Length: 80
Image 1 (spheres, rainbow, N blue to C red):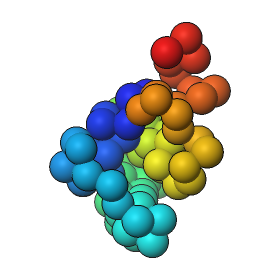
Image 2 (image 1 turned 180 degrees about the horizontal axis):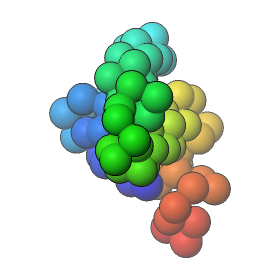
Image 3 (image 1 turned 135 degrees about the vertical axis):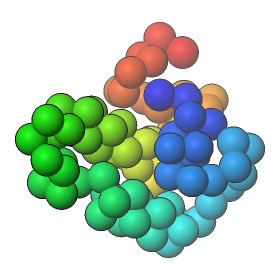
């Protein structure tokens, strides 16, 4: 996952540099809004996919060590 994509998923502008506390607050808000248990059975699969992307975005942005060269180490784009 690219850093810009992660920021967009959590509600930040693409080139912004949110603080760790801003990232955590945005993550908690998005998780609360998209938790699969809040959706009816026929929407759970879609909600689970979105929930996983939000978790991946959070992992990307939560520390400076998690991302380098605007690509997250160990996540989707390992060869970047």
